[in-house]
Length: 317
Image (cartoon, rainbow, N blue to C red; front, side):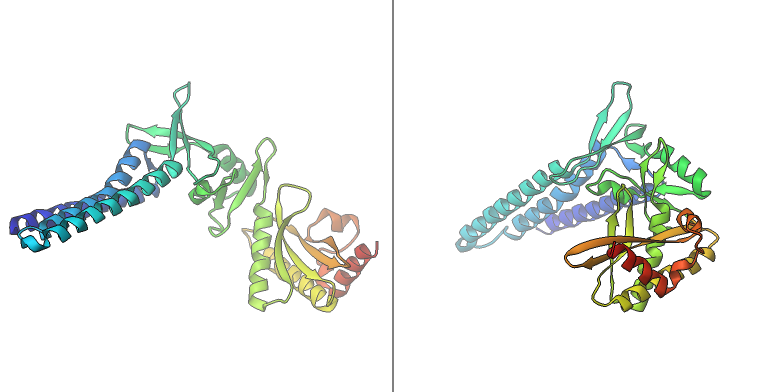
């Protein structure tokens, strides 16, 4: 029996070494935007999932050897119960894997396409380049990256995590602001939300630091781009206009002092709920063409009085 235990320990040791090599290499390759091909990933998942059940079953069998006859029936029942349990778990794991496993497709011109699986959701196909028979590297988003880098004069990379979400838009990460995620909505004429995301991050930081009573929201106002906005009832206008003016003031201060800022202007949308209606009031700041057309200074709305006048004007029609 001791030899059986030694063999089992050796099998466990080999399995652990294999796990470290397979998953460690996978993590290392991801730093260079390289992934395993589908067959290799599937093989790795299968071995990683099935092997522990096999090893534990061997342990049960070895442990039951040489037991007295009176316990043989109980031992057989225990082994049968474990087999049933293992088969059920592996069955559901296999079903889940079939729904979430990445898919590969070779196009008519010989190019590789990959769909990142999301459980019970539509998959989107992304172009890849093959690396021999075992690896692949992304070939998508390069046009958008080039246009972003030309527009903002900084480096961008693809946020790989965004490919695992149920969304059509790929996220891009600027090296100047690694915590931000930029979406490109069109490349015929570049449409992106870098500036809005940058301004929104400032609003969120100030809102959190000061613990403002008014809530921050995230809405689209007549276009694909979403904006961070200030949402409040008109029950306490003094607090609302003060918060709006303070957000604009801090955003201007941050933007003007940041040499890497992607914009020189921005807008704070104030969403006011009044008499069962919702009003969206844009408050531009910085080098805004709207402010210039109305002959207003770039910091016009850092004044709570000016914010109040603008909101009441739009509410009262």
